Picture 1 (tube, one colour):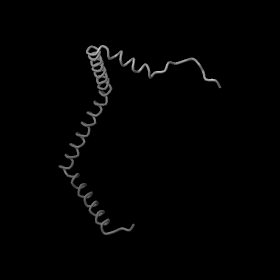
Picture 2: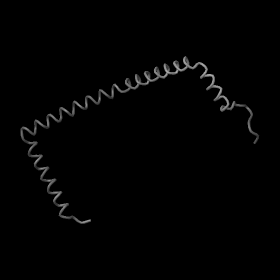
Picture 3: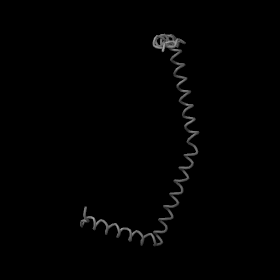
Picture 4: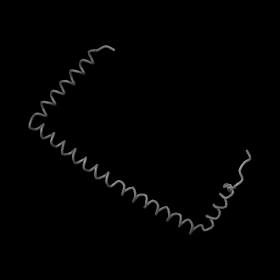
Length: 106
C-alpha cells in the first residue's frame, strides 16, 4: 500500500492541528482550559472512587430488598392459595427419584 496524496494531506492536517493546539495551550487562556480540565478530571475521579466504595453496600441493600420482596410475594401466594404448595410438591415428587444405596454390579 503506497502513500497517496490523501494520506499526505491527512498527515499535514494532523500536524497543523497539533501545532495549533500546542500554541493555544501555551497561552494564558489555554492554560486556564487545561487547569479546568484537570480539576474536572480530578472531580470525576473522586466521584468514581466514592461510587466504588459505596458499591458493596448498595448491592447488599439491593439483594436484601429483593430477598424481602420475594419472601413477601411467596407469603402472599401461600395465603391466597394455601393448597398450591402441596400441589407443587406432589407434582415434583414424582419427578425426583429417591436415592438408593444399591450400587450397580460391575
